[in-house]
Image (cartoon, rainbow, N blue to C red):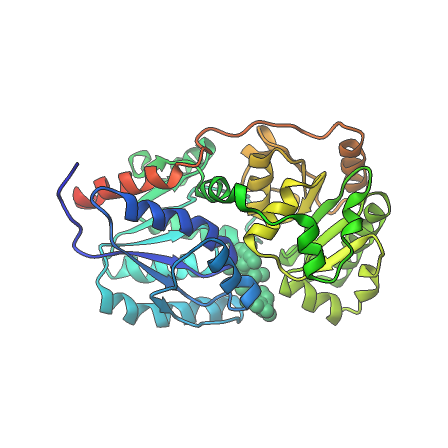
Length: 382
Ligand code: UD1
């Protein structure tokens, strides 16, 4: 055991829902490390609704943030700029040993940029994933964050190849595994029963008793939900699917707002579709674990379904997580109605992908990150 200590805390940044399940195991691993690595949790407030933030903190047993920057919603420019403005004085006040960012949301890039320019070492967990689609805001956040940080932790081997291709030295990259799957391992035994989740929202749990089971749907990507025609077409196909297999649709606030704004509420009015608000972590894991199929445009759900062995149809043209397609249970179907119908039909006839769990998605990624981070910081964060 090393007796060296750090000159300050590891400042851990979360902003939006998908960050929370990544940060929870990291905080635990920093505390469990020998010697313990002090952490300071900063919530930028990018997500602020109880259902998008507080509930996840409770489910994941995350500590209350030490700081909340309360930036809220806004255009990409406004939101990113607001995080930067509010994060700078916090960074000055706390003098951390390093800043740790996860994922690809606006808060990830904003905090990395502020810290790097102040000479504070920054590390990125979930580095190197690429969709090769620069119309996705997350892709811009990924590419830029990876260019400026000092140490990069990856979830799959292809990510290191992507980074090296972008001129990043291979020695700065550490293949640590998938922290999101650490959370899944930790909470798998404590998920909420799907019937209870439906009941809690006034939906009929009998829906889940269909002989072929049920499907779970989430949608929130701008490319799927910000264009009225694209959204109407997708909801139309989901209505068709629901006629064969009951669906549980957990609606993101952005999607909820757009459905109403575009006058599409009628498309959700199907007896075999339970429309729920955004779900907590334990509810969502329970729903997914019991599902016949998950239809989604989320990055996290593609990984969680692969770890759970549940077939996933991804409603996108590309994925930054290719291992879920190559080794896992994921199939890309885009917004192609025929591909979605055929994908569901194949799964219902017993031909869904089974897949296998990728290398180092073993529940111990955060421990590997804590050990590597300590070693890196104590040799001067070169
Ligand atoms: C953000 C992330 C995305 C991630 C997603 C998960 C970026 C660029 N995008 O997208 O990568 O997959 O989170 O949800 O960072 N809203 C609320 N309550 C909230 C938060 C948002 O009502 O707590 C509404 C607001 O009207 C807001 C809209 O949802 O304008 C979108 O929120 P925003 O944070 O801008 O992006 P997401 O679509 O959630």
